[in-house]
Image: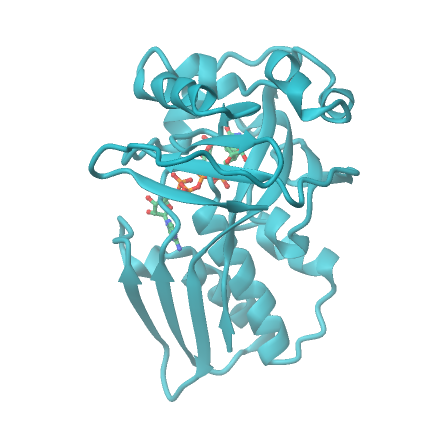
Length: 270
Ligand SMILES: C[C@](O)(CO)[C@H](O)COP(=O)(O)OP(=O)(O)OC[C@H]1O[C@@H](n2ccc(N)nc2=O)[C@H](O)[C@@H]1O
Ligand SMILES: Nc1ncnc2c1ncn2[C@@H]1O[C@H](COP(=O)(O)OP(=O)(O)OP(=O)(O)O)[C@@H](O)[C@H]1O
C-alpha cells in the first residue's frame, strides 16, 4: 500500500498554559498542507524499514512510522511488514512532518490488515505518539486545544488560495521552542478572527512562537517580511518553526522569489 503523508500549517497559535504533565496547552487552527512524503507498507517475511530522501536524525528504530507499527502490533499481533519512507517534508519545521508519517502509518495498517479501527480509536493511538499526530487521522481543518490533540470543527475554506512555504534550512527542536515561550491568554479569539476576511488576519492572527523565536533566529522575521513584500495578504511562522508561509490573494503565486542555498520551498494552490 502506497500513501502520501502530508504536512500541516498552523493558522494562529497561542500557548495558553502549562499542564500538570509539563506539556503546554495551546489554541491553534490546523490545516492540511499538500507537501507530502511517500510511504509504502507491504507484508514481508520479516520487519524492515528503509529510508530515502531527506536524512532523518536519530536511530531508525525510533522512527515514528516504526513506533506506530509497534503500537498496533502489540494489540493486534500484526504480521511483519516492510516499510519504506521517502522523506520530502523538512524536519524541525513546524510542519508536523513526522507526525503525519506516524498517523498515515496507523491509517494504512488499519486498512491493510482490516483492523476495523474507528477514527476515534486511531486518534487515541496517534495521541500516544505525539501531540500533532491525532490531527492527521481525519486530516481536515480543526480548532485544536489542550496539547493540540483535542479538536473542534471549524468552518474554514482556504481552497483556491495560493500559498508559499519557506524552510530556511534551520532545524528548530519543538521542545526548545516551547522552552522559549511564556504561556499567556490568547491575544484574540481565534475562531472569530479567522471568520473575518484574509486581509484582516495580519492584525489579529498571530503565533506566540514567532515573537519568542525571532530574536534568536532573525531570518524568520526576514522571510516573513519578504513574503509580505512579494504581495502576501497574510504571513506567519508555522507551529514552532522554522518554516514560514505566506497566503496570497486569489490563485496568484508571486513571481520569482529568490531564496538562499539550503532553503526548501513548497508553493501551490491550496
Ligand atoms: C508546535 C506544534 O507543532 C503545534 O502544532 C506542536 O505542539 C508540536 O507537537 P509535536 O511535535 O507532536 O510534539 P511532541 O512530540 O508531542 O512533544 C515534543 C516536546 O514539545 C513540548 N510540547 C509539545 C506539545 C505541547 N502541547 N506542549 C509541549 O510542551 C514538550 O516539551 C515535548 O516534550
Ligand atoms: N518519520 C519521521 N520524520 C521526521 N522526523 C522523525 C520521524 N520519525 C522520528 N523523527 C524524529 O522527530 C524529530 C523531528 O521532530 P520535530 O517535532 O522537531 O519536527 P517535525 O516533525 O518537523 O514537526 P513539528 O516541528 O511540527 O513538531 C527528528 O529529529 C527525528 O529524530
